[in-house]
Image (cartoon, rainbow, N blue to C red; front, side):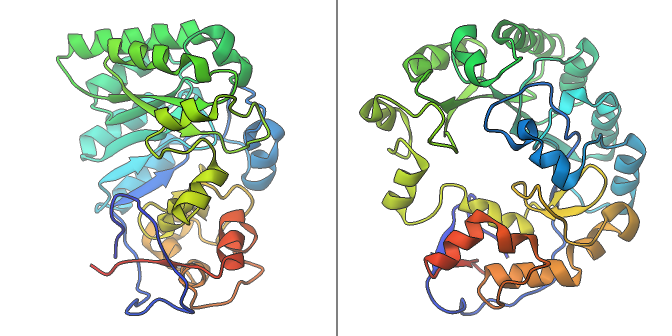
Length: 336
């Protein structure tokens, strides 16, 4: 079973037709390398302490990482970034080298802040063919950037990007692919064009993202932001009104395609979940077994509209799921 390009298709029927719940054995997983972050972004649950209260504070250990790869030879790609900053984990270079030796691709598409990365880490990204790095840069100056990325330093991030560019030249490599991710706020919307130009100079793709909390620095020039956004909207509420689905509804598909594993091995299901786990632990129980235990199977059926919500399933209290229920919608997945 799969989805096309992470697009979400929602159905209003009681249950989607032709869908059979089967065991999953995904070639791609999400594995949190660190739930620690040195920045204090105002609306981030790691800043407020919500993440650490729900899923704990810690680093993925290299020994656990190597054990997982040895026990799961079918894995092809692992996403390492989520609620923390991957470069704070001192064992990251070892993981990058080991994954490369095993032929497993590594990415950080969710995002990194790249404020504190050693030269060893930056070189390892290039030398061992780290696939993709998405860098959070919400502005084109320190003045704008630091209003949300508190404790961050814009010039330091740019210096690290220049180092990466130099290493890529040294190794004659196109990897890692680099994306400049710009979350649009009212305080930085005037710098979108400048940031886009800077990204091009650094050989980076440029990606605009809608702020998840409209109450923090909401956009001022709505029409200008709509013109800049590929989706043609200036807020997540406007996105839902225009497209009939939630801006991040694709996340629900991760329970099948890119399941999230915490730094300690607990199964979280998706990258949004920072409040509970699904009972299984991949370091203790094995990856395939953990992803197909009773709670994970039930959760997938819940999202498909085949089961009612249950208190021990983290999805039950998720805003995405509750909004789907309120709209009498279920997740629809296409058969292979």
